[in-house]
Amino acid sequence: MECLWCNAPDVEESEKKDCYWIMPDGKRSIKLLQVPALNCPGCGVYVSDHMNQKVDEALSIHDLSEYPDEFTYDQLLLAPVKQLFNWK
Ligand SMILES: [Zn+2]
Image 1: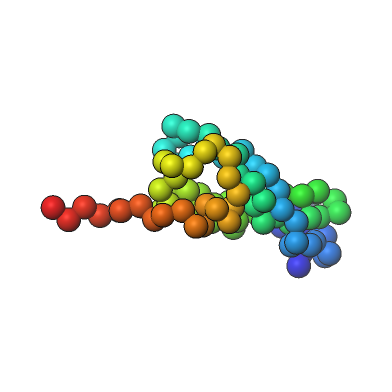
Image 2 (image 1 turned 30 degrees about the vertical axis):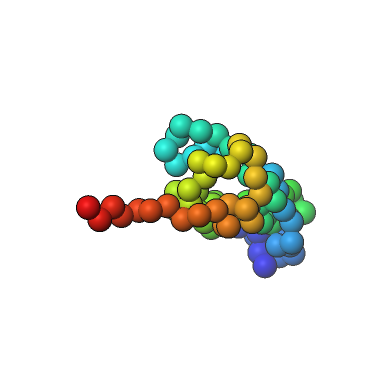
């Protein structure tokens, strides 16, 4: 596929990157390991906007209160989903 930034044609999707992330509520910062990333010969390894959105979404959907401040992207997806609605 093409690089989103420089349009280099031979970007690889097989890379993983460790990223620091601020939780959507802004109260906690975490280190997210092995986030699926792109590897461009010109730009280096980076996380696409699409993946950024997916991570943000996952961080707000899943309950990470029991998690340490460092975990992998796969663990994030395995975290329990928050009870979004309270039927009282
Ligand atoms: Zn590039």
